[in-house]
Image 1: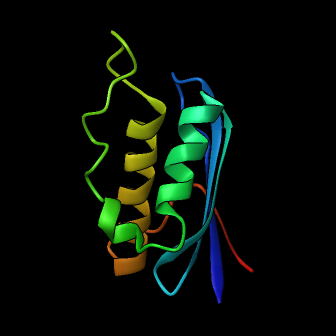
Image 2 (image 1 turned 120 degrees about the vertical axis):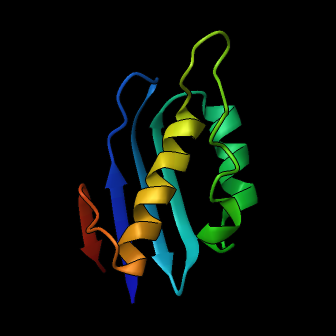
Length: 98
């Protein structure tokens, strides 16, 4: 079974991030907005890998002089997904079994 998680970050160029997981692996990742070349390259590197491999990796990523970044929000989303999967907290945004 696949689970699709959707998150709408605030304060970054990317307006929506979608991650589809199957057996803990990221089967699809989409970014709406942001820097398409960079985000698509990162997406390619992360596809079909366990989401847990990337927990914390982008936590301190910045976009230029800004404190925040699209990948920092991606990291935040992964943290929320991890809590949902572990049963610690329910995912507070859109989640759908597909």
